Image 1 (cartoon, rainbow, N blue to C red):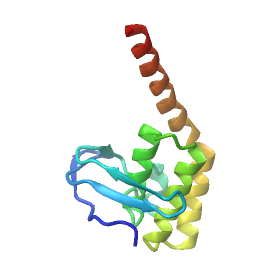
Image 2: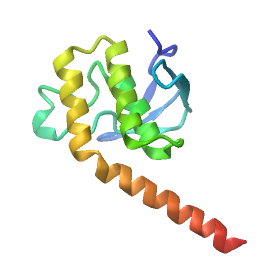
Image 3: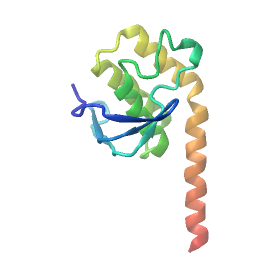
Image 4: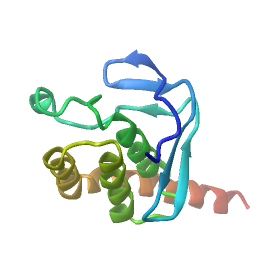
Amino acid sequence: MTFDDRLNVEFLKPRTWKLIDPLSYESKKLERTFVVPAGFVTDFASVPRGLWNLFPPTGGYAKAAVIHDYLYTYGFGLSRGEADGVFLEAMEDLGVNWFTRHFLHKSLRVGGWVAWRSYRKRDAAMMKGEEDAL
């Protein structure tokens, strides 16, 4: 198991939770450890409401979803494919069954670009703002 921490969150509002304690994950494939700090806000798995009976946002893949949200939010020099790969790897480490982890991963590959692009545009705007300030 490559998760060292228990998941401790505070409910803020529907589809929004805040980490009370940090959550760390060691990706063996990327040979990197990611530490999500306390205070990070997540929606867990971004599953459409109509599929919650099969794939609840806070299912057995909740820790993997938090790591993935963190990677999408900040990028850390990863490609979108690498971030999605970490999600798949983490779900496997958590013992999530093959069908569920591959369904969620493929769904990300189809629709995750919207969120990824939004965060990267935000990053670019922040960098531009810093350059303009110089």
